[in-house]
Image 1 (cartoon, rainbow, N blue to C red):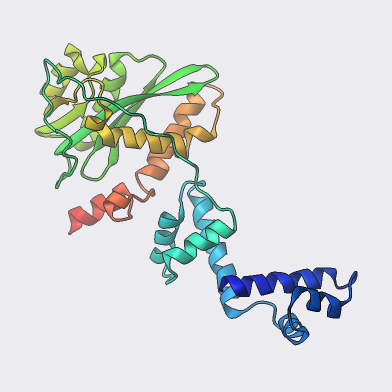
Image 2: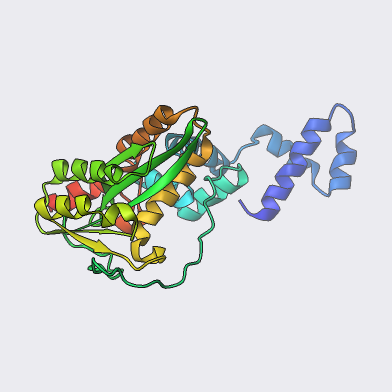
Length: 294
């Protein structure tokens, strides 16, 4: 529907809403529309395209609500396309815009200056985040989550091949056991061999316990430069998505509630369902299944 058509339709709707108050002939004359057109519209107020828009809008709302308000137009469009719809991405974006359906806004990106290389552990990744097979390169990082009980710290391990979170752990303190718990889960699930595990220069990743565990379990530690988040950008990006799509919406009563919500996000949404543009619009688990079965 063109802008002119929408303008005429709004005038017809105004006349219909006020026909018991004002004379129809007078309103048509003042609004510059023909009475014959108005009466024809009354007999068929919704065009075929408008009816189709209403049907699509129901599907859009269903996709948006299923993502818990996370998906914008591009990912909603992929949902519709996967279900067999043939509408355009621009039409989806228009319907979402006109009906005030908006994804949760993100966080501003902080600026960092280049730091110095780690003295003990080299950077084996060097911002090469494109990986052709599973378990070639993992990345790990830590973030914090506010609760009424105090801070909750979250450590994750991600496989760069599929962006899947293969291990994670939470604790009330930022002790080295936090990252060890996360990598233990990863090792148990993936059984790596000669896998690079990349992190920032946090003290937890520089501990003797961390290095001993990695070397005895088929992992080769790698560290980014000091104070440079871009060297571990994919892990930072995951935390941005987690906070935008889930944590920002809540104030957690205690750490247990926060941990349960993080678990739900990772295990029930992010890994199996959340679409990634980097992966061609599919989730990490679907990407792994598809690529490994090819």
